[in-house]
Image (cartoon, rainbow, N blue to C red; front, side, top):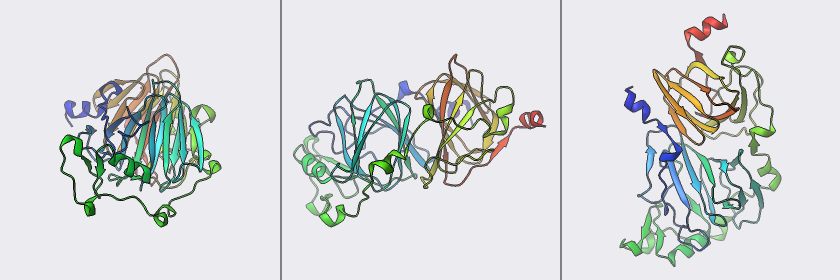
Length: 346
């Protein structure tokens, strides 16, 4: 791969480009100002104006969202897994097809996996300086299913959805489709088919690195100079090598998610995997090496790592760092160490 193509796989948070009307609910009262980001893959954005930074399929999608304080992302459901990492601000999640099954306020560092087929919504309840990263399962995560009040209310502001979930903006001059081509509200029977998730069940799907010890010996290089780290198995089979790393959330997502805590000067020595991975920085400053290319990345930056390429990353800051590693596929991914690392391991 060329240096230019490798550099294009590093998307810094300062370069994220939002879409203000990515979804049909964005003109409803209380929903104004929602910014949607598609970092890797198109996600479920309904507006063709949405910028996608890296379109290459990874087996999952990575995106982001920010909201003015007090504004809401409306009740909706997905056909694939949805996982959030709270980076900044405080967020109130609530769920159920009518939004009354439960609620929880999440803070920076919290990761939540929403059960597939569950209506969910969220509201910014902290500072306007807020942001969440998200992972959606599968290359094609399908379409959003909106609560009925969203479909009905958006029509009053000139927003409609076709049955393929493409957005129609009659105020911008779009031609109004025939009624049989428009997405219709759900019947009561259809609504009752969606999951009802208890507060206890949802609470069990929340993980924060600061609240768990992690595993100090999950990889063979942990005992080598520069390789000390703790690994947190958050979702799925993961990519750990040593230790009984049972994930906090076990059901298939089409990807696994782990977190690495490392003191300054430490991280992963040179290795590779046979599947694609995405590295997202949660805290600290890190150096990422992809082949012969070196990149400095910081909080909320995203790095797409090709399958089969030698890579390493280490905390180059002065404080402990956290990096999140999403690995494609539901099966455990096996690690291969570079020859110099194997020599050190004996």
